[in-house]
Image: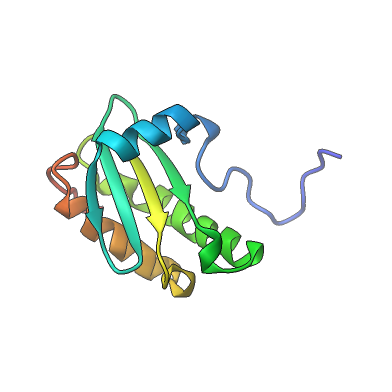
Length: 126
């Protein structure tokens, strides 16, 4: 059952090692630096390695909608994490309106949130 599909690139998304576990996820939300925008809330905590987590409430819509939001936010994290000057643990909590985000909009939102964060201090232009 583990066949490769023709034309589908391998290795999209974030590696398993870059995902926050349950305890780490809660710790970042409890003790991390919080910044928000109209479509999401971001929690940052300085760390030795970059890790991230995403939370999407059932209030946003059906499972299809929630999974689409998670995919877009996950990809935007993957593409924009080079803008961080140092590694952080990051938790994104989606708000109403996140279901209408495009990938480009999500990347812009994340870079804006990075620039507000003391945990990320300076932004590298990627």
